[in-house]
Each structure stands twice: as C-alpha cells, then as structure tokens.
Amino acid sequence: MSGTGSGRFVGLLLCAAGIYTAYLYQGYLQERITTSKYEPGEVRLPHLGMLHGLQSFVCFFAAGLVNLFLSFGGRKAKRGQKSTPLLEYLKPALTNTVGPALGILALKNIPYSSQVLVKSCKLVPVMVMGTIFGKKRYSLKEYLCVALICVGLVVFSMKKSSAANKKLMEPNLLLGYSLCMVNLAFDGFTNAYQDKINSTYKSTSSLDMMCWMNFWTGSMLCAYMFGFSTVGMELVSFLVSHPKSLLDVLAFCLCGALGQLFIFLTINKFGALTLTLVTTTRKFFSILISSVFLGSTLVGQQWVGIGLLFAGLLWNMQIKNSKHSKVRSKAK
Ligand SMILES: Nc1ncnc2c1ncn2[C@@H]1O[C@H](COP(=O)(O)OP(=O)(O)O)[C@@H](O)[C@H]1O
Image (cartoon, rainbow, N blue to C red; front, side, top):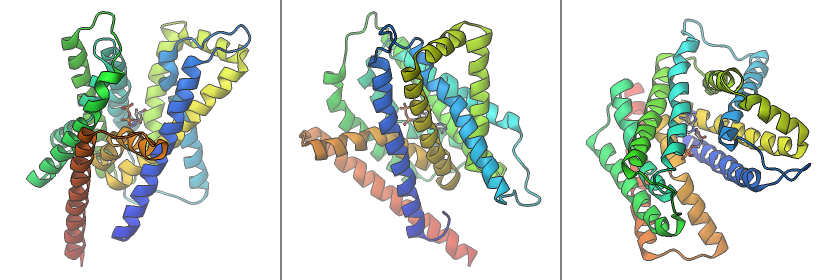
C-alpha cells in the first residue's frame, strides 16, 4: 500500500470502507444481543458490559492465525530490524481497555449526545499526545485543519443532541465530563504510542500489533473474569446453555476482529492521526449516508457542519499530498 499517491488513496478508502462496514454491522449485532431474550427460558445475556472485552480473545486468535499463515507463506522480518518487545504493547493495551470503560462510566452522568460531542474532538488529544510521546511535529496549518474538522463535527452532531437525550438517574456533570476527558486523553495516548511503536520498531506489522495488544487486553480481562469474579463462569455457562446467544456473540466478535484488521492496517500504513480521522467521521458518514438513502432531511445547521468538515478534509488531503511530494522529491 505504499506506491503512488492515487494507490495510497484507494488503499485508504478501502480501509475506511472496511472499518465503517465492520462496525456498522457490529452495531446492529450489539443492538440484537442487548435486546434479545434467548431460549430456553426467554432470558437476556448477562454481563452485557463484557461484550466489547470478549472480542479481544477472538481478535488475538484471528490475528495470531493469520500471522502464522503468512509466516508459512514466507513473510519474515528484515535482517537487522529490532522486533518489538511484548511489554511495549502493554501500555497502549491498558489505556485502550481502561479508556472505553471510563467512557461507559461517563454515560451514567452525562447524556450520550454530549459524549459524542466531546469525542468529536478526539483528533486534538491524538496530536497533543503524539507531540509529547511520539516526538511528532505538526505545523500550524495542520492544527488549524484539525480544528476546522472538529468544529464541523461538533456543529453537525449538536443538532442530534436534544432528541437523543434520555433522562439520567443522578447526573453529575463534572464527574461525567472529567471521565470523558480522561477517556479522550487515554485514546490519544493509545494512538500516539502505537505510532511510536511503528516508527521505533520498523518490522512491526499491523497483525503483530493487533495480536499482542489483544493478548494483553485478553489477559487482563481473563484475570478479572475468572480470577477476581464469577463473571467468566456465569457467561460461559449462559453461552453454552443458550446456543443462539453463542452464535450472536461469536458473530459480534468476528465483526470486531474484521474491524480491527482494518484499524491496525490503517495505523501501520497511514498513521494514528489518519485512523482517528476515519473513526471520528464514522458516525457522521453513517448519518449522512442513511439520510441520503432513507430520504430523511438534514437541517441547515447540519449542512454548515458538513461544509466545514469537507473543507477540513480536503485541506487535510492537500497538506498530506504536498508533504508526500516533498518527501519524494528529496528521495530523488
Ligand atoms: N488505535 C486503536 N487501537 C485499537 N483499537 C482501536 C483504536 N482506535 C479505535 N479502536 C477500536 O475500534 C472501535 C471503534 O472505535 P471508535 O470509532 O473510536 O468508537 P468509539 O467511539 O466507540 O470509541 C472501538 O472498539 C475501539 O476500541
């Protein structure tokens, strides 16, 4: 996926399409699992909060198997390149596990729509953490461009907020927003550290990173589920005695694994900032596409958001292109 500018662009579009499709379908499966009553006994799946964590086991095995298959096919690290110590993946795995859990806790104190608004600005912590931990340097133009994209996303999503709000039991706004901020900082750290690993250890493939980050996440989860609580045993016995739920959960995890294959490929080939651009615009594009296909109308404010966002995205492409052509002309 290195090659020419247009080749890279097509590669990025394919990765983005893979991420959007996998997580769109996973969202549908999540809805089905959380609302279904399974036979026998018409009962709901317990410990729904564990659902996202469960996929780390499947993702670990999926990445490990594909990696093994490719290594039989002859893929080897180049000589002289340091391989990544397994402990290096622990830090981003930890922030990637704790971050989303804090996000879920935040939802007990602030409405989902407010969280979407805050998360629209995820590009900012990715840049800040990249500067601190990854020693990355961004130009003023790049900061302005990201600000434009964030403002576009916020203006677009603000419209949805009032309708999507549901009454919270005892909202604590200060706690909710603080948790949201820590979640964002953790997300930023995860991405920046992944970038750092990729640039320090050049032989790290996207499959290595997917495999070993999920190894650590899965190990922490295993310790909690089977060592410190009865959650694991309760889940296993439910899934075994309700085969339909097992199939649904397996499909959910496989979708997550497919999404992660594209996520880690995007980080590896295009960097964490581009990945964040793809993931933060995901919900925006799904609203846009569904409104085009289902014929629901967008209000004026959303069009303003769309305008700002596209202006930012085009500007971002132009900055990236000029960076690439500078690098290529230096290499000649
Ligand atoms: N840099 C990353 N490394 C590993 N997993 C990631 C990364 N970025 C996103 N993900 C995973 O991809 C999924 C979708 O991410 P995202 O679109 O940011 O959604 P959310 O708003 O639910 O966090 C989540 O399960 C998240 O954990």
